[in-house]
Image: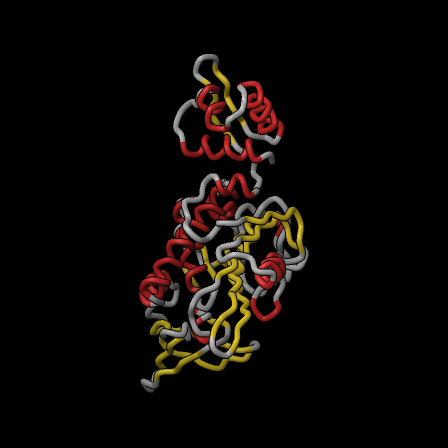
Length: 325
Protein backbone atom coordinates (compact mmCIF):
# COMPACT_ATOMS: atom_id res chain seq x y z
CA UNK A 1 0.00 0.00 0.00
CA UNK A 2 1.33 3.44 -0.95
CA UNK A 3 2.02 5.70 2.07
CA UNK A 4 -0.35 8.33 0.67
CA UNK A 5 -3.14 5.75 0.54
CA UNK A 6 -2.33 4.84 4.14
CA UNK A 7 -2.68 8.50 5.14
CA UNK A 8 -6.07 8.67 3.41
CA UNK A 9 -7.19 5.61 5.39
CA UNK A 10 -6.09 7.23 8.65
CA UNK A 11 -8.06 10.37 7.78
CA UNK A 12 -11.14 8.30 6.97
CA UNK A 13 -10.83 6.65 10.40
CA UNK A 14 -10.48 9.92 12.31
CA UNK A 15 -12.98 12.11 10.45
CA UNK A 16 -16.75 11.63 10.41
CA UNK A 17 -18.82 12.03 7.25
CA UNK A 18 -17.39 13.11 3.91
CA UNK A 19 -13.86 14.46 3.42
CA UNK A 20 -13.40 16.89 0.57
CA UNK A 21 -10.89 16.30 -2.18
CA UNK A 22 -9.47 19.75 -1.45
CA UNK A 23 -8.83 18.80 2.17
CA UNK A 24 -7.16 15.51 1.17
CA UNK A 25 -5.05 17.33 -1.42
CA UNK A 26 -3.88 19.83 1.20
CA UNK A 27 -3.17 17.18 3.86
CA UNK A 28 -1.20 14.96 1.47
CA UNK A 29 0.54 17.81 -0.33
CA UNK A 30 -0.46 16.46 -3.74
CA UNK A 31 -2.85 17.40 -6.56
CA UNK A 32 -6.54 16.45 -6.65
CA UNK A 33 -5.66 14.10 -9.52
CA UNK A 34 -3.09 12.33 -7.32
CA UNK A 35 -5.72 12.02 -4.56
CA UNK A 36 -8.10 10.37 -7.02
CA UNK A 37 -5.33 7.96 -8.04
CA UNK A 38 -4.90 6.85 -4.42
CA UNK A 39 -8.68 6.55 -3.94
CA UNK A 40 -8.77 4.30 -7.01
CA UNK A 41 -5.93 2.14 -5.64
CA UNK A 42 -7.80 1.72 -2.34
CA UNK A 43 -10.94 0.70 -4.22
CA UNK A 44 -8.92 -1.85 -6.17
CA UNK A 45 -7.76 -3.31 -2.84
CA UNK A 46 -11.38 -3.85 -1.79
CA UNK A 47 -12.17 -0.67 0.15
CA UNK A 48 -15.65 0.70 -0.46
CA UNK A 49 -15.32 4.46 -0.94
CA UNK A 50 -18.26 6.65 -1.86
CA UNK A 51 -17.57 9.77 -3.96
CA UNK A 52 -20.16 12.57 -4.13
CA UNK A 53 -19.57 15.76 -6.15
CA UNK A 54 -19.09 18.89 -4.01
CA UNK A 55 -19.04 16.74 -0.84
CA UNK A 56 -15.98 14.55 -1.29
CA UNK A 57 -15.27 11.00 -0.20
CA UNK A 58 -16.19 8.70 2.67
CA UNK A 59 -15.23 5.14 3.61
CA UNK A 60 -18.22 2.79 3.71
CA UNK A 61 -16.57 -0.65 3.92
CA UNK A 62 -13.19 -2.33 4.32
CA UNK A 63 -11.81 -5.68 3.16
CA UNK A 64 -11.00 -8.31 5.77
CA UNK A 65 -7.26 -7.79 5.64
CA UNK A 66 -4.56 -6.94 8.12
CA UNK A 67 -1.81 -4.57 7.09
CA UNK A 68 0.28 -1.95 8.90
CA UNK A 69 -1.52 1.04 7.38
CA UNK A 70 -4.98 -0.27 8.24
CA UNK A 71 -4.02 -1.11 11.82
CA UNK A 72 -1.99 2.08 12.32
CA UNK A 73 -4.96 4.17 11.23
CA UNK A 74 -6.85 2.96 14.31
CA UNK A 75 -4.04 3.05 16.89
CA UNK A 76 -3.87 5.59 19.70
CA UNK A 77 -1.04 3.83 21.55
CA UNK A 78 2.13 5.46 22.86
CA UNK A 79 4.62 2.58 22.76
CA UNK A 80 3.11 -0.56 21.26
CA UNK A 81 2.70 -0.35 17.50
CA UNK A 82 5.32 2.38 16.96
CA UNK A 83 6.67 0.08 14.27
CA UNK A 84 4.57 -2.57 12.49
CA UNK A 85 5.82 -5.46 10.38
CA UNK A 86 3.26 -7.34 8.29
CA UNK A 87 3.96 -10.73 6.69
CA UNK A 88 1.60 -12.55 4.37
CA UNK A 89 3.03 -15.92 5.43
CA UNK A 90 5.63 -16.83 8.02
CA UNK A 91 6.68 -19.77 10.14
CA UNK A 92 6.13 -17.93 13.42
CA UNK A 93 5.61 -14.28 14.35
CA UNK A 94 7.36 -14.99 17.66
CA UNK A 95 10.48 -16.17 15.83
CA UNK A 96 10.36 -13.11 13.56
CA UNK A 97 9.92 -10.73 16.51
CA UNK A 98 12.74 -12.47 18.42
CA UNK A 99 15.09 -11.99 15.47
CA UNK A 100 14.10 -8.33 15.08
CA UNK A 101 14.63 -7.75 18.81
CA UNK A 102 18.12 -9.28 18.61
CA UNK A 103 18.82 -6.90 15.72
CA UNK A 104 17.84 -3.91 17.86
CA UNK A 105 14.13 -3.41 17.10
CA UNK A 106 12.59 -0.62 19.17
CA UNK A 107 10.31 -1.41 22.07
CA UNK A 108 6.75 -1.71 20.89
CA UNK A 109 7.61 -3.27 17.52
CA UNK A 110 4.73 -5.50 16.40
CA UNK A 111 4.85 -8.39 13.93
CA UNK A 112 1.53 -9.37 12.32
CA UNK A 113 0.97 -12.23 9.89
CA UNK A 114 -1.95 -13.39 7.80
CA UNK A 115 -0.91 -17.04 8.23
CA UNK A 116 1.72 -19.13 10.04
CA UNK A 117 3.15 -22.50 9.12
CA UNK A 118 4.75 -23.15 12.51
CA UNK A 119 2.48 -21.50 15.06
CA UNK A 120 2.99 -22.91 18.53
CA UNK A 121 1.43 -22.81 21.96
CA UNK A 122 2.60 -23.83 25.42
CA UNK A 123 4.82 -26.90 25.79
CA UNK A 124 5.45 -27.13 22.06
CA UNK A 125 1.81 -27.66 21.12
CA UNK A 126 0.67 -26.72 17.62
CA UNK A 127 -1.38 -23.55 17.13
CA UNK A 128 -3.49 -23.83 13.97
CA UNK A 129 -2.84 -20.70 11.89
CA UNK A 130 -4.82 -20.67 8.61
CA UNK A 131 -4.82 -17.61 6.35
CA UNK A 132 -7.47 -14.93 6.17
CA UNK A 133 -9.30 -15.59 9.43
CA UNK A 134 -7.38 -14.94 12.65
CA UNK A 135 -4.93 -12.70 14.50
CA UNK A 136 -1.31 -13.83 14.77
CA UNK A 137 0.73 -11.20 16.55
CA UNK A 138 3.99 -10.78 18.45
CA UNK A 139 5.15 -7.70 20.36
CA UNK A 140 8.69 -6.69 21.37
CA UNK A 141 8.99 -5.24 24.88
CA UNK A 142 12.08 -4.12 26.79
CA UNK A 143 10.82 -3.69 30.38
CA UNK A 144 13.10 -2.56 33.18
CA UNK A 145 12.31 -5.58 35.37
CA UNK A 146 14.16 -8.65 36.62
CA UNK A 147 13.90 -11.95 34.71
CA UNK A 148 11.80 -13.58 37.44
CA UNK A 149 9.15 -10.88 36.92
CA UNK A 150 8.78 -11.54 33.17
CA UNK A 151 5.89 -14.05 33.56
CA UNK A 152 3.75 -11.15 34.81
CA UNK A 153 3.62 -9.81 31.25
CA UNK A 154 1.58 -12.82 30.07
CA UNK A 155 -1.25 -11.58 32.27
CA UNK A 156 -1.17 -8.20 30.51
CA UNK A 157 -1.69 -9.99 27.20
CA UNK A 158 -4.69 -12.02 28.37
CA UNK A 159 -6.41 -8.98 29.88
CA UNK A 160 -5.76 -6.96 26.70
CA UNK A 161 -7.35 -9.70 24.57
CA UNK A 162 -10.37 -9.92 26.90
CA UNK A 163 -10.86 -6.14 26.73
CA UNK A 164 -10.59 -6.18 22.92
CA UNK A 165 -13.20 -8.94 22.66
CA UNK A 166 -15.58 -6.83 24.75
CA UNK A 167 -14.92 -3.76 22.59
CA UNK A 168 -15.52 -5.53 19.28
CA UNK A 169 -18.26 -8.05 20.11
CA UNK A 170 -21.14 -8.63 22.53
CA UNK A 171 -19.37 -11.66 24.00
CA UNK A 172 -18.20 -12.08 27.60
CA UNK A 173 -14.68 -13.55 27.77
CA UNK A 174 -13.11 -15.33 30.73
CA UNK A 175 -9.45 -15.94 31.46
CA UNK A 176 -8.02 -19.34 32.36
CA UNK A 177 -4.71 -19.72 34.17
CA UNK A 178 -2.04 -19.40 32.99
CA UNK A 179 -2.55 -18.01 29.50
CA UNK A 180 -5.85 -18.85 27.78
CA UNK A 181 -8.88 -16.71 26.99
CA UNK A 182 -12.23 -18.53 26.88
CA UNK A 183 -15.71 -17.95 25.49
CA UNK A 184 -18.40 -20.20 26.97
CA UNK A 185 -15.68 -22.46 28.36
CA UNK A 186 -13.95 -22.92 24.99
CA UNK A 187 -10.50 -21.58 24.10
CA UNK A 188 -10.51 -18.58 21.76
CA UNK A 189 -7.02 -17.21 22.39
CA UNK A 190 -3.63 -18.31 23.65
CA UNK A 191 -0.53 -16.40 24.73
CA UNK A 192 3.11 -17.46 24.58
CA UNK A 193 5.97 -15.33 25.93
CA UNK A 194 9.65 -15.78 25.12
CA UNK A 195 12.55 -13.94 26.69
CA UNK A 196 16.19 -12.99 26.27
CA UNK A 197 17.79 -12.09 29.58
CA UNK A 198 20.99 -11.83 31.59
CA UNK A 199 21.38 -12.57 35.28
CA UNK A 200 20.80 -8.95 36.26
CA UNK A 201 18.14 -7.90 33.74
CA UNK A 202 16.02 -8.49 30.66
CA UNK A 203 17.20 -7.78 27.13
CA UNK A 204 13.69 -8.16 25.72
CA UNK A 205 10.46 -10.10 26.00
CA UNK A 206 8.32 -11.28 23.09
CA UNK A 207 4.58 -11.39 23.74
CA UNK A 208 3.03 -13.89 21.34
CA UNK A 209 -0.75 -13.55 20.90
CA UNK A 210 -3.05 -15.76 18.84
CA UNK A 211 -6.80 -15.11 18.67
CA UNK A 212 -9.33 -17.19 16.73
CA UNK A 213 -11.46 -14.51 15.08
CA UNK A 214 -13.27 -15.86 12.01
CA UNK A 215 -12.40 -19.57 11.92
CA UNK A 216 -15.21 -21.94 10.99
CA UNK A 217 -15.72 -25.30 12.68
CA UNK A 218 -14.17 -27.15 9.74
CA UNK A 219 -10.92 -25.18 10.01
CA UNK A 220 -10.04 -26.48 13.48
CA UNK A 221 -7.75 -29.54 13.75
CA UNK A 222 -9.39 -32.82 14.72
CA UNK A 223 -6.90 -33.60 17.49
CA UNK A 224 -7.40 -30.59 19.78
CA UNK A 225 -6.60 -31.28 23.44
CA UNK A 226 -9.30 -28.89 24.67
CA UNK A 227 -12.50 -27.46 23.10
CA UNK A 228 -11.78 -24.43 20.92
CA UNK A 229 -13.93 -21.81 19.25
CA UNK A 230 -13.78 -18.48 17.42
CA UNK A 231 -15.50 -15.14 17.85
CA UNK A 232 -17.40 -15.84 14.62
CA UNK A 233 -18.72 -19.18 15.89
CA UNK A 234 -19.79 -17.70 19.23
CA UNK A 235 -21.30 -14.44 17.98
CA UNK A 236 -22.55 -15.43 14.53
CA UNK A 237 -20.81 -12.37 13.05
CA UNK A 238 -17.45 -11.90 11.36
CA UNK A 239 -14.94 -9.70 13.17
CA UNK A 240 -13.03 -6.97 11.37
CA UNK A 241 -9.50 -8.25 11.89
CA UNK A 242 -7.76 -4.89 11.57
CA UNK A 243 -10.18 -3.31 14.03
CA UNK A 244 -9.64 -6.14 16.50
CA UNK A 245 -5.84 -5.96 16.12
CA UNK A 246 -5.77 -2.22 16.78
CA UNK A 247 -8.20 -2.52 19.72
CA UNK A 248 -6.06 -5.23 21.31
CA UNK A 249 -2.80 -3.31 20.76
CA UNK A 250 -4.35 -0.14 22.20
CA UNK A 251 -5.45 -2.02 25.32
CA UNK A 252 -2.08 -3.73 25.67
CA UNK A 253 -0.37 -0.34 25.45
CA UNK A 254 -2.58 1.07 28.24
CA UNK A 255 -1.93 -1.97 30.43
CA UNK A 256 1.83 -1.81 29.80
CA UNK A 257 1.99 1.87 30.74
CA UNK A 258 0.02 1.13 33.91
CA UNK A 259 2.36 -1.77 34.66
CA UNK A 260 5.40 0.50 34.30
CA UNK A 261 3.88 3.12 36.60
CA UNK A 262 2.18 0.96 39.24
CA UNK A 263 3.63 -2.54 38.93
CA UNK A 264 1.78 -5.83 38.64
CA UNK A 265 -0.91 -5.08 41.26
CA UNK A 266 -3.62 -3.42 39.11
CA UNK A 267 -3.24 -5.95 36.28
CA UNK A 268 -3.30 -8.83 38.74
CA UNK A 269 -6.56 -7.53 40.26
CA UNK A 270 -8.30 -7.24 36.89
CA UNK A 271 -6.99 -10.62 35.77
CA UNK A 272 -8.40 -12.26 38.91
CA UNK A 273 -11.81 -10.61 38.41
CA UNK A 274 -11.92 -12.11 34.93
CA UNK A 275 -10.63 -15.57 35.85
CA UNK A 276 -13.02 -18.49 35.28
CA UNK A 277 -11.86 -20.33 38.43
CA UNK A 278 -12.68 -17.74 41.11
CA UNK A 279 -13.86 -19.47 44.27
CA UNK A 280 -14.10 -22.84 42.55
CA UNK A 281 -12.55 -26.26 42.99
CA UNK A 282 -9.86 -27.01 40.42
CA UNK A 283 -7.31 -29.66 39.53
CA UNK A 284 -3.90 -28.83 38.09
CA UNK A 285 -2.18 -31.58 36.13
CA UNK A 286 1.32 -31.79 34.77
CA UNK A 287 1.94 -33.88 31.62
CA UNK A 288 -1.48 -35.45 32.03
CA UNK A 289 -0.90 -36.57 35.62
CA UNK A 290 -3.21 -35.06 38.24
CA UNK A 291 -0.97 -33.52 40.85
CA UNK A 292 -2.79 -30.85 42.85
CA UNK A 293 -6.43 -30.13 43.63
CA UNK A 294 -8.14 -27.56 45.79
CA UNK A 295 -9.93 -24.23 45.96
CA UNK A 296 -8.65 -21.54 43.59
CA UNK A 297 -7.48 -18.58 45.68
CA UNK A 298 -5.84 -16.44 43.01
CA UNK A 299 -2.33 -15.73 41.75
CA UNK A 300 0.62 -14.34 43.63
CA UNK A 301 2.98 -11.52 42.68
CA UNK A 302 4.93 -13.86 40.38
CA UNK A 303 1.82 -15.15 38.60
CA UNK A 304 1.92 -18.54 40.31
CA UNK A 305 -1.41 -20.24 41.01
CA UNK A 306 -2.55 -20.40 44.65
CA UNK A 307 -4.68 -23.37 45.78
CA UNK A 308 -6.07 -24.20 49.22
CA UNK A 309 -6.59 -27.91 49.82
CA UNK A 310 -9.23 -29.44 52.08
CA UNK A 311 -6.73 -29.62 54.94
CA UNK A 312 -6.27 -25.80 54.68
CA UNK A 313 -2.77 -26.06 53.24
CA UNK A 314 -1.92 -23.36 50.70
CA UNK A 315 -0.13 -24.63 47.59
CA UNK A 316 1.78 -22.55 45.08
CA UNK A 317 1.76 -23.99 41.54
CA UNK A 318 4.05 -22.50 38.91
CA UNK A 319 3.11 -24.63 35.87
CA UNK A 320 0.53 -27.11 34.64
CA UNK A 321 -2.89 -27.40 33.02
CA UNK A 322 -5.85 -26.20 35.09
CA UNK A 323 -9.30 -27.79 35.00
CA UNK A 324 -12.31 -26.39 36.84
CA UNK A 325 -14.32 -29.12 38.54
